[in-house]
Structure formats: structure tokens, C-alpha cells
Image (cartoon, rainbow, N blue to C red; front, side, top):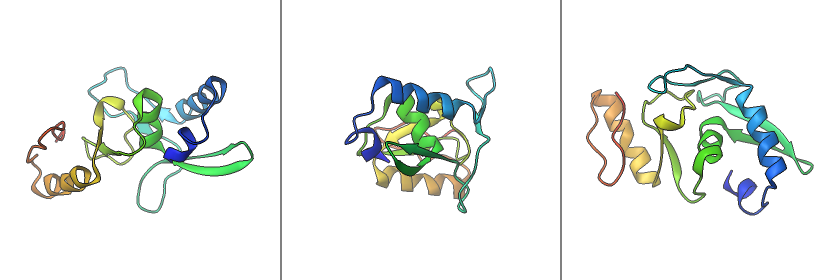
Length: 125
């Protein structure tokens, strides 16, 4: 997904359009401690996605990554769900981190307790 936002150099108008399309598919609570749930299509592995056509090319964008991009995206990092809810797009429940840290969060889910992630935010269990 990162190439869509970096190499393509989206204009402010394109970013605004993408943000509007994204927000139409989000069920959002007033409380930022709760997950904001993706109400659009989901992949076979349970993650939300948004299908867009941008400059004549069709793309599937992961909803949680798009949510983070709208706030603050670093293209070389992964977006982790701190709440472990694959459909959550609440930016306060997402963290930009290395793939290895993202993967280590699966241990937290198995144990139902966060191990702590040095240099990164802890899971929300």
C-alpha cells in the first residue's frame, strides 16, 4: 500500500476523497477507548479493506493501514492492532512498528496478557 501514498504522491484533493470514502465505511463510537469498527468488505483472513480506483488503477487497501495513513503513515513500517481486533480502525488502537514487533503481539493474544514491547506501545487486552 505504501507505494500508493509515496510513489504516487497523492494530491490533497485525492487524499480528501480517499478519506471521505473511508469514513463512510466506519462505525465510530464517541469514546476513543472503544474500537471504531470497519463496516465495509473484509478479506478471507478477517481484515477490512477498501477497494479504490486511483489514476485508472484498481487497488485494495487494508482498512487499518489506511486509517493510520490518514493520521500519520510511515511507509516502511507495519501497522499493528493493539486491541487485536482485525476490524478496528481506531487510530488510538493502532501502532506503527517493525514487522518483528507486530509478529510478537501474537504471543500476547495466546497468553491473553501483553509481554511488553520495548520501544513500542503495549497491547490493549
